[in-house]
Image (tube, rainbow, N blue to C red; front, side, top):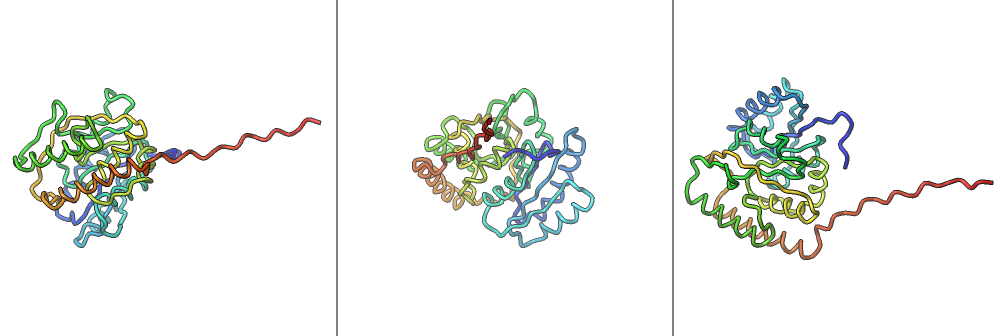
Amino acid sequence: MAEPEQAPFLSLVIPAYNEASRLPQTLIQAQAYLERQSFATEVLVIDDGSTDGTAAIVRERAVDWPALRLIATAHRGKGHAVRVGLLASCARYVFLCDADLSMPITELDRFTDTRLGEFDVAIASREAPGARRYNEPFYRHLMGRVFNAFVRWMVLPGVQDSQCGFKCLRGSLARELAGVQTIDGWGFDVELLTVARQWGFRIVEVPIPWHHVRSSRIRPVRDTWRMVREVMVVRRNLRRGVYARPALPEVPEPQVAEQL
């Protein structure tokens, strides 16, 4: 899908569920950073059926920030919120951003750096050379590494950190991937990256500084088990051809009038 004329350069997509306590500061920092940039942006907050004041906070902030837009959905999970945001985006690039800003928003510079080249998907990595983790409990790090080893073995060999919530995708590809995404839960990252690789697109890992946030929405034991099951679904779908890339519509040959 081509970007519309005069589309912004970057769509910032922020999935949010009951983020009334953290979102105000996140939006303040995002606005301050983005309004210093030379490129045009849109900011989409996808409210995943929050029961607190998340939606009201976004609406209030949007009064003085025209680039900000709220999209409200029923509560179906982060994967569903991301899919809604990708499909609603219209920019040349789409950046997925966690509402807790565990990666400082200023680090987005790393993803617009020309040294990345013409990437298709650039994923923030806590494991790539040069990355730093701050204040993360050892058990959380260990669980993350075990899960990622499982992901590499099952569907994504070579990708060291599929689960960090900060990812930049070429806009047209992001919207195409969202069209075949099936997973609504936390395992959506694995699915999107698996499909992108299946279609032959380039994935690069970008080292970042990452700060552990205590009030993370992930429940380590329960959500890790669910993510394992979702990885198995991705592997099964891959084997069954579920992720075959939709064929482009055929363009009819131009009709040439007969010469009399």
